Length: 212
Image (tube, rainbow, N blue to C red; front, top):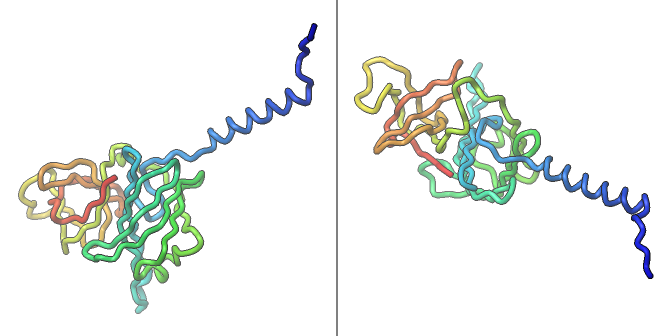
């Protein structure tokens, strides 16, 4: 007759260590979330990711101004997405990889967009780090539906869809926004580039938008 004994302490310890390692790996997996990541506003919905990157340098004391501006879109596989990036109105598409990390996110492109090496540094080869920012009051990233870039010379905010007020806040070409709501021909947009977040309605024709 065979007698079954309990596993030795070494075997039990190994099994416990393996279980803890597996649990720890699951907990450490970054969760894709909408929000601000450095100079990029990111939207995550239904397994897809969209983003708008906008950063400028120079333009003071006689120095030339350089800008790194583009839209991004891709499909997530875990915490990573193969993405396509582009600048509104241009046919060129640059591919890359966008990855959520414990500190925020990383972006690596096959080649740089014009102006980016001077404004931000190259995004080719070594992944470009995007640190997660704390949500600003009233921004509610979970409610974002998309992102966009202003393409009009001046886009005037409205309290509701309709005629523009004679005086009011406005955005200019290449200002980035998060899209909160869409109606036929209109978007309710959030701008975070000022002293405080600002929300208002803009004509959809004034934006180049990207949604997940």
